[in-house]
Length: 478
Image 1 (cartoon, one colour):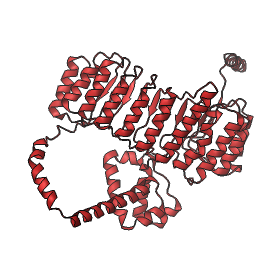
Image 2 (image 1 turned 30 degrees about the vertical axis):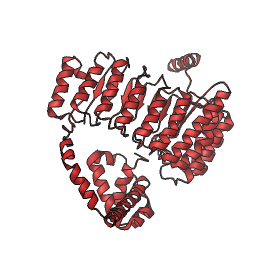
Image 3 (image 1 turned 90 degrees about the vertical axis):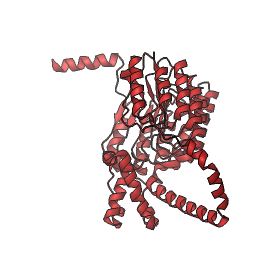
Image 4 (image 1 turned 135 degrees about the horizontal axis):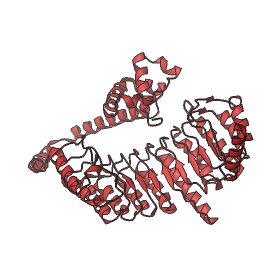
């Protein structure tokens, strides 16, 4: 009777169109170096009819292993979703582009039409983007809906290559009557900065189809933010905009506020830790009050917002029936300002929406009077500084910048060689470690501690421990 029941259930599922289309090796921690190490995987892929999705997350795939997997994918014309995040742990950066090229070529050869490409948490840098450049421009990506490249270390160069590839894909797909309609774009922690952000903004404006954009922690300042704001105006279906931990300042915040007036479908706005400042917050409040009827979350935390600006934001969200949370933590309200804000929101019967204010930084000091008094003295002092002293200061600044650059290079991509070359500059690493420990806590640093390579053991024990901490913090893998 039990067997009959299972058979009936199977028949019923088949009739309703519920068919397993995904093959998953997620989180198995396999070290796949060569064809032999993936023989069983290849066999399963080959025998899986109408395969649509392949999950390789949490394994480590070498070049030869990737070629073998790719060979098995060459006949999978129904293939749609690549879940290939975190699959190059411990690999040389030079290996990754070759592996990606093999997999991309197989997808194209199969005539597949992708909807999801997820390569997040792979530290492939600009060269890795080159490894998927051909794929992104091909017919396989004309149907792409989700592109996830979070924490890949693309940098400015990689971001520009990515932007150019998306623009080319859109032009070619448009010529065939079915323009690229990307809906989800994720590229946090990639050091894109202004140039790459501006290049990507051009692609976003051209597509006009985005529903989610996640680009936190990319070192983008107001020129890049302004370019993105202009692009967002052309993506009217946008629901989620996450630019957390970039630097808007007032100029960028005001530009973004203007963009919000065109985005009536926006549900989540995350501009936390973006230094929007009072004028920027007031501009955003104005945009919210004029529209955004289905807004659910508004994050303006850690932005140097003062009491009056915070109250303007609070008044702006009044009457937003869908709103679930307003985050104004970590601003410059002061104890009295925090209480005033709480009382105002309670009076408007929306007090339950306000997040914690426990990290408020207090009322900013008013230095304007002091600045006026000291202006004349400063001018006199400037005249007294001779050219020789100025040259010495410039030389010292250049040396400090060079030291910081070397240390940042090591932190971005740690290696024994780089550490040894630092010499006396190693002391700066300890300072950096202390800063990150204070900011994020030991639990965060310990969240993803890497197994140290044997080559690290050539260095003294204390530095090995430090490398472990740095690797666990490193944006490439964290």
